[in-house]
Figure 1 (cartoon, rainbow, N blue to C red):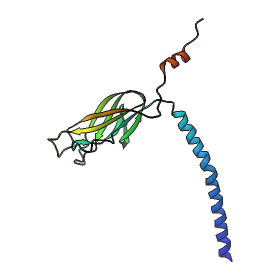
Figure 2: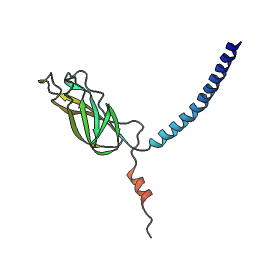
Figure 3: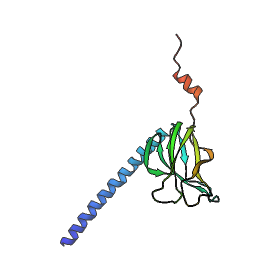
Figure 4: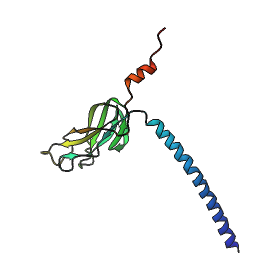
Length: 163
């Protein structure tokens, strides 16, 4: 008899917590959607180091390890940045000695709503080291759904009326 009471209490508390989850889930999703909707009007650029040329044996993916002197410890191969001039620190993913992590600083004038596909182009004559490489800008693509603000509309909105 005691066993049945504790089981029924557990089931009722489990159903209550399940109801809380069901109620909170749509609220959290609505908040996330409104936040993302507000951010979608802000233009941005993307550095994508995850699409190196597989057919080229000297081409490797890269990781973004710093932007404008600030190090990132996530080592992301795809990074969203604000439009403008940036000093991007890139690190090759080519295997090498564990202590040999060679980075390059790449100066980029990032345009709004553009994706920059980059890779590490290694020297073919130096196969057993990851030290000799250059940043290879493979291509620049438009970001779907990203809208560049019209400077004419901004000027009209911010212009003060003449007296």
